[in-house]
Image (cartoon, rainbow, N blue to C red; front, side):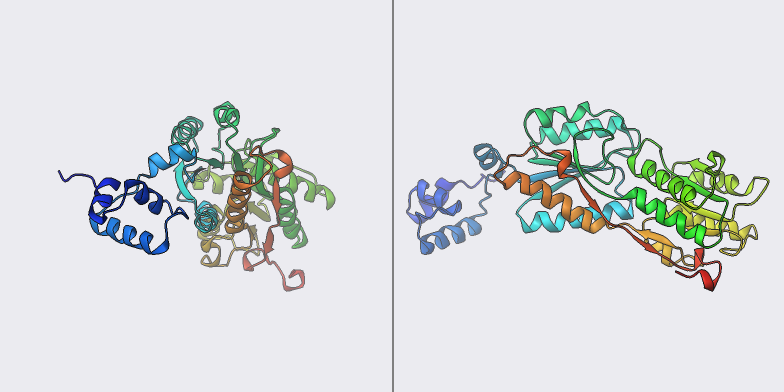
Length: 346
């Protein structure tokens, strides 16, 4: 096995002191540019590897940011991570990314791994079954900033970046009502997750504002997985009166519903007008094209990362509070799946 090249080897080859080599490799101003270049070139030719770990121990910074998401195969989460990575790269930070797979226990293990990896800060979108937050206490005890995005803790003082899910749910439901829908099924995810809880509130507020009763029998909580599509479709069609509107809080499942309903001879949007959520690519591929809500994932990632790094590099310390929570606007995108008549086109 070949010997690891050290600063002493570089110093010997160039006839300078090891102190000069060390300073040059750390871009110290005491070393002139010509000498720095000689040392950089020699280090590169000899295959020298800078000891990042030792440098991090001295500076007590790793320039690594931990990111924990529910699932990496989510189009939305991929968009968020892209936004985070753009800002992190610009500001000299690296990302360490893991997924909880919607499991509280896996999330706890991920948080512990991030802590032991000495990340400078942590960005988290919570797993579906997370209801307690003690596993973040080691970060708080060490004043290591933790910022949540999209799925945030309920009734706590943690900071976060979110969209106004209440307004988004209201807008989607109100649009269906304006299309003449009066029996609107709402299919959403785990009711413990803030995003679904808030969209349900928006759904209820829209019904109330338009003089329609809230009916719990028209609301279904479901895991948005391939295995659940049959039970979701059964929930929609197996009732005394077919609903005339459908608001699914996930574009992929909304698109699957359209496909399955059409196969059963139900006309979309004439018999059931359909709204999705997220503005995934599939919303533009399904026939008819799916009305949806544009969820600004990339912008959310940029803002979350910039906010976290600002607390790492600013003069106000690193403790994040709920006053640091940022709420983004979403945008309703109307397509053919929900337009029951041209006169109602908005």
